[in-house]
Length: 215
Length: 381
Figure (cartoon, each protein chain N blue to C red):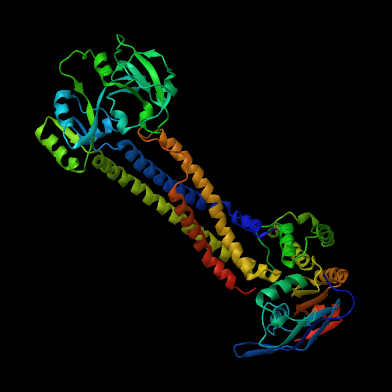
């Protein structure tokens, strides 16, 4: 459950990661709760790597990372998994669903991972706002791409996480659809006072965000 | 949505693949179990029927036929022997006790066995109703005979010549039922017991100076008897001696080959099903590469992912074993109707081999899930 009031939710300093001889140094980060951030840059500069580090999936070679006042890098892998499930929502570009489950079962599974009780009313309300309320009993893979994308966001925010990471959310969308999607994301995260971090190379998004971090 | 439910959904996401692996496993395990059950019943049946009979003496012919007819009561006798000639042998000092048997007649397909009083030294049956036969033409019924024919204490009946349902009726002599034995679970439940002299009476031989009997069961005082007497009887008389244990071993060898072949095929099926199970799990693991990542991204630990794959494998165990047990029980039930009456197959029973089957399948299941499980465990989110 996201905290209320403006306070530091994430701070990172001196983060770096090497892939062979290619070393990526990341800028200092300080995210406030309830704010929206755009991390932008060209392809290959390490945007996805950064989001994986910030969500505890990948460990950096150097640096400090504190989320909700806790040093994420000192936690064990299973502790980071549990932390991510509880306090974060991830909406990756190449999203996946559990193919043997229908849409609502996928959402229930994600709720279980967060350690919270599945809030059916909230999910129904959010699905209505995302116009996929009639699709919840279908297999996600029988939905259109746009519906799958919205289900992906719904899964990321349903448990009102403190941090929502969205990786290239507008990659395949036209201008209007991109704008609408960011509007919806803003609206949904605002309602739960979640911090939204969008990572993208999409130049169109610059006008949608006040806080922008270039890589 | 718990681990088990997710594993269940994953298992049946491709129902035909799962179904085929389960069929292989269930048929293999059931066949394996049936072979163990039949072998156990065969060994038990052989030893229970032999029950202290060290040697059988009868007319010359096949020793196996002699043993089958006079100990297991499932074949025609080899012929008759002169009682006077036999008596000389039965008085041998190496013989502890013996019993003379005479066949010839039946009632509604059940054999009437004429015997002397020593017969019950070999087979100490307990009475369920009435008393033992004391006079000629009195009978005690085996349990099944009483159940099927409906004969009761005090009832009279005529025997027919031969062992079939149809035959020349001996309607000049009545048998009278004096007792009914308790269920033995052996072929003896299917026999009608009467004093030896009844058989001679029915065949009008009571006054003949030479009487014939079908066979004699012998119990030796010492193992030395088994070494000396059979050789002497087979070499120096018109009769033959057969050792039931040796003949039983021959039967075991004959049937054992068949059972061994069936068991080999069953093991092959189980191994194939294990390979199929592994193939299924491995294919699913590769197809769902992104799903393992997703589970970790959602916050599930790698132990959960490993546990999920192991649970999916374990579901084959949970589904396969009861189905295999049901199929084996059904098969045994059908088989029991086609197996010689000497062997009463216990359809519902827990076998010692069941423990090995359960442990073996459990091991196969764990191993099948291990490689994809470890691979998924090592995957980064």
